Image (tube, rainbow, N blue to C red; front, top):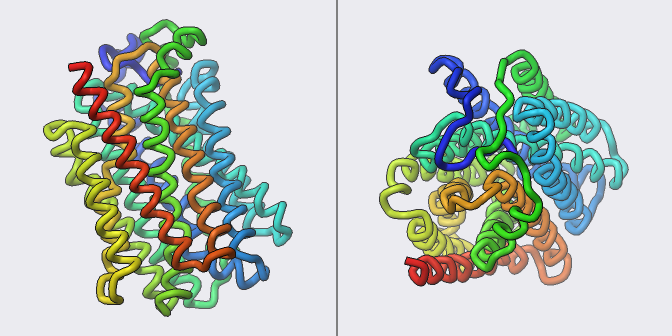
Length: 401
């Protein structure tokens, strides 16, 4: 895998100038901006797609499931590609996959063709997840928690802007197809950047992927709790991002503009939280800060969903507490100093993809069975399971101390 150990940087990377390192870092940040932008086109455009094609909530949820199925596949396979061809190839593939997937998705109307196109989009997003994190971990030996949170900030910037952008186009009588087509320019730009930029081939400090060592390090009770943690957390975040616009319109009676604004506020809170969290996460400790954030998320979601209308703003405010979860979990795993940490991060991201697939899908299925309000409240259940996993991890850490 291309993700390095926490102890050293490979010899080819030491030869890079400071300017080149920051050029590559900027490329990683740009990739994560596109990640956030494309990944969260689905929230503001989903209501228009469902009405245009007369799809059910279950069908909408299944299309979203396809995206994260592709994400899971990518997080498994791009780790192998990173070993074989390097991180640059992974990020180049991401740009190409996004370009193809977005183009097909914006042109098709058949349910299974849309699902297939979203699967290809998911491949691109998963490749960015693996490649972008690998790039940052490669380039920055110290304060990785901080740099990974900064990387995630750019995901937040893209996520924040896209609901406002999409709502503006939809309000101006653009179709959901045209909204997706406009994002193709970003994907092409990313592909061109990683086609021309120079990046040295690296090899992990452990000397390459060893399957037996990987299984021994990755199949432990501690890693099992990390896998559960990342899966249910991502299920909560992506479930909210995918369904909040439809939820606010159908349950709370909000307009397209206001509901999309709430989605933007959700991602604005994530962006601000990651920026602020990058300065305190190392001091408070990875597990402790995630515990506090998850407990606060349960409170804000419960009050926002089941409280009086005046408290609905607490739903997007939850993004403030969600913000540090994914990058901090990534930093926590990379700090375990186990063999083949890059491959284990790939598995971790795969479980994140599993959560991203199941969260929106389960909410969509449940919405057809018990109504959208109760289905949307599944996000609270996901947070409770996240809290359970974190408590188990803290207990293990104390026992090992």
